Length: 173
Image 1 (cartoon, rainbow, N blue to C red):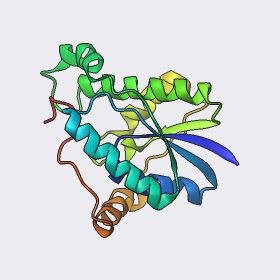
Image 2 (cartoon, rainbow, N blue to C red; image 1 turned 45 degrees about the vertical axis):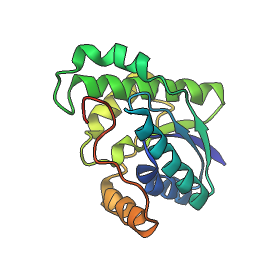
Image 3 (cartoon, rainbow, N blue to C red; image 1 turned 120 degrees about the vertical axis):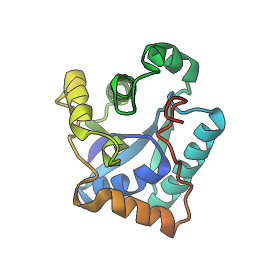
């Protein structure tokens, strides 16, 4: 079976993405790497929700380190950028580079990300970044297509999952 490492930003976004990939016959392992999430209590809420989803979908999760101070140091130059601007692009790059590194380290066939499920994220920007990292290992899936976002929200409601009301970093808060 073809193995894919799925970068996961939060449990709610992961739900439909995991189901989608499993329906396509992938062996899915989730990778929770989000140094951008602030404050740490929010990070823990999202991680706890992810483990609920992992249990519901029988999905293994790998946790990356929570490197919020390092993330803030790298991104502070863009703190005044609007949502969706250069700060977000750098944030996507940081997370996708680490997921690509982990993909190679653990010998996965492919990697992809839940980031494309959000209607607030531009999939083309994410795809361009992924292309610059490793276009042969990245699965170019726009999870928001075919009502993916709507389906993941329905799953969140069905299972009473915690849903955040901001992207994650202190600047989007």
